[in-house]
Image (cartoon, rainbow, N blue to C red; front, top):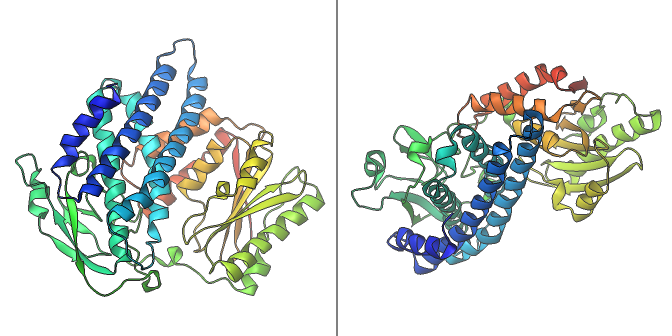
Length: 434
C-alpha cells in the first residue's frame, strides 16, 4: 500500500474541487486516510489467510469469519469517530437527529465487511491493488459523509435536496442526467434507473457502477421541519424502494396480552428452573420495550449458568447488546456456546439476515431468540454438531447470489428461510412455540 502521506496528497486533489465547504473537505480527507489504513491492514490479513497453503479450507473459513467481524467493528469505529464531527462541519441545527442513520450504518458495516472479503477471494488481483483500496476508501467515506450531510439538513429542517455532479468530463452519463434532480428530503433520487437516497448510497439496490468513485454532492432547500414523529424515515434500508412497508414489517404496539403470550420453546439441556427463567425474561423484555422504549427493540444477554443477564435498548429496527459495557465483559468472560441473546422485533418478522450474522460470528453465543411484539417466540440454537466454517460458508454462498447491494425485505427473508432449512447440515436448529 502507498504511504499515508501520498494518500493524503491524492485525497486533497480528489476532494479539493468538490462543491463542499472547506470544513467538509478537510473532514473527508482526514477520514479517508484513517479508513484507507484500516482497509489496507484488513486486506493484508485476508491475503495472509488465503495465501497460506498450510491452512485447510475449514480453518480458513473460520479465520475469514473472524476477519469479517473484525472489519465490521473497525468500520463502526470509523463511523462513530467521524459522523458527528461531519454533521457539525456541515452546520448542524437544533432539530431532531435522523433516527435512520443507526440502521444504515449497522447494515452497511456488515455488508461492506462481507463484500470486501468475497472480493478478495474472488478477484485477488483487483482487491489487493492500491487503486482498488483507494476507490473503496473514497466511496465509503463519501457515502458516510453524504449521509451525515443529509442528517445535518434534517436537523436544520430542510425540506428538499438536489443532486449535483462534479461537472467535468469524468461524470458518468447517468449521473450527468441526474444533475439538478430535486426531490423531498425523505424520498430517493432516480439515477440510472436505480433509487439512491444520496450519492454513493447502495442501500436501495444501486449497483457498484452507480456508486464507486462517485463525486456528486447534495444541495438542500429550506422547508417545513421534518421530525421522526412524521414516520417518514429518510432511508428505508434494504427495501429496494421507498414505499409503505408490508403488514408483516409494520411496527406493532406491544399489549399486555402479547406479553403474556411470550412463551419460548423449552431449550434442550436447560433445567426446569432455567427454562422458567428463560420464559420470564422474554416477558420482561417485551414489558421493558412497551413501557420504556416505545415498543422498539430491546435485547438481553442471558447466562443460563448464573441466571444473570444484561440489557440494552435500541431503535425501531436495531439494537446492539454490546453497547452495554457490562454485557461486553460478560461475553468476554464466558465460554463457547454458553450465552443466549434475546431480542424483540417490533413487527411480526422472524429472524433477519443480520441476526444470522450475530449468531455465527459470536462464538460464545449458544443461541439467539426473537420474540415479535405480538408475543410469538422462536429460537435458533447451536447444537453439539455445530460447524462454524460450514455454516459461514453456506451463508456466504447464498448471500452472494443476491449481489453486493443491500437486501430487499423479501431477499432477507428468503436467505433466512434457506439457511434455517439447511441448518441440520451444520448444527443449527430452529425451535418455536406459540
